[in-house]
Image 1 (cartoon, one colour):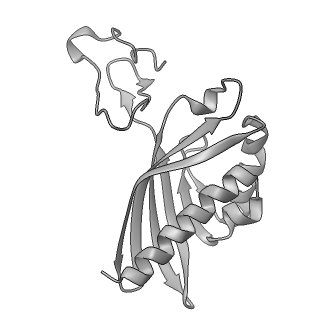
Image 2 (cartoon, helix red, strand yellow):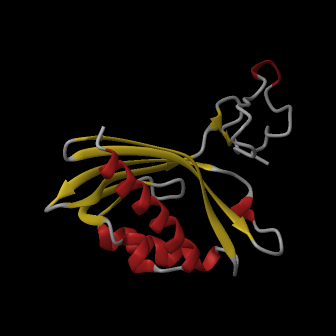
Length: 163
């Protein structure tokens, strides 16, 4: 593994998270290309290209709280030549009043490619697990706890309705 490339990508991930907190659209979308494919946690199921992803963020950010932090956890980066992948947990923490954006951590996987010496995002996938017994989102409230639905009692438990 090339430690310099791994550290560079970690820096890009941190800069992306900081750009989200700052509502910096150029910073958020700066590593996407015309070919980048985003499978996001919110509809539509697929967004292609930097301009479309940019518009998705422009449409989404007004629904965030006025102040929040963007938190990363368990960042893993693997590099092989001019391709790399990373995965991590992402969380938005509202500052002040409660806001729905702070209810869960999200799983994020990013495929990277080095183009003309710069790392760019080829593919990004942001997701939440779901309870297959209820078809409800399974929130990740504490990433230190790997919990799951009680399949013998579909609909029971604190996460049964995606709360």
